[in-house]
Image 1 (cartoon, rainbow over the protein chains, first blue to last red):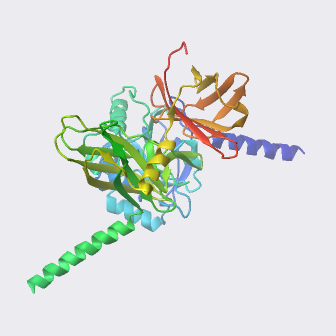
Image 2 (cartoon, rainbow over the protein chains, first blue to last red):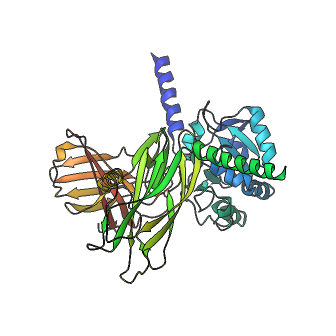
Image 3 (tube, chains in turn red, purple):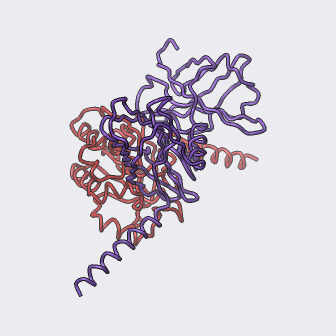
Length: 199
Length: 277
């Protein structure tokens, strides 16, 4: 009886943890995922660093907008050079768009010249749902104290046109520049746009 | 030899374009409704978009994903065009995400206003459509369609087109005029209170609010409502990462009734939000 109670308690507690909704200005929920090369990473591995979470699906027209233009890679390169950790996370379920083999992911990443720190596989969508990730791309920024300080779109032009990138306000670079300058993030959320995450 | 190559190149280009048109699971055209200049100096037009099975296109607020459908018009000098009228969208919900849009066929109506001193006997209309169409995957659907409308004092459109316009107009939200509306904001939700509502409250199967703007409310048609003796309370949750403070409630209330026809009615509502509401 006691053992059954403990098991039920653990299941209940575990489901609560996974049902936890990420909130701005609160500690970002920890998670552990395996990257495309088989290495495990936890968010807590990157304590004391600024971390960017980028929800990705290489076949989504909105992700293509930012990768074909080299916009995303440019951000990745600029900010990882400033010690920001950049995690691309794919929550596409098996058989859904964006869920590729390891070989295909690495081929696409190489062809794009992607400069993220790691490409993480979230096939069961647990981390995506934990963070309320709706679209690809959907961007999150965690500051050095582990607090979620930005959640939303990459910029303010919801379109698939590469031409719209130049004139748009990039919320991610603005927030990162503010954090790196020791300031608080002035625009902490925006409406994310993109394809739906293929849970 | 060169002449043969030129003909061959032309045929290849035409074939590729035809293939592209056939492969795109959507098409668009401009249609014109009946009008009479004796009654008013306006010509109703519609952008008719047809989609293949299982594809959908988005409302002015796409919801959790997608992209708002936008149309930029160019019309003859001197003529003005109204804003598009948006039929009540369907809600596509999957895995906790909700999008708002249309499938099968949609007609987006606008009115051309022709001034008294307009001298030409025809109006040119060009519409640039920018949109996203989705099934399990999404593709951009960008199309430029145009037409030249020969003006007459009275014009009667074909029956099929007249039906399209009637159907679209029946699907437009009405303007709230038969109930009182107040709102009660709190930290996580907004409660919309409807009083003096002139419908059989017991027949309301479902009620939800769809905002015109995105990023403030959680996108869903599963919204909690409570029937009171004198009206209805509808609780609309804020988005997990609400991107702005709510200053104005602007969107549509959609009622679904459990009558024989399973009918649906929608009203556009607009209300400033302050602590005294």
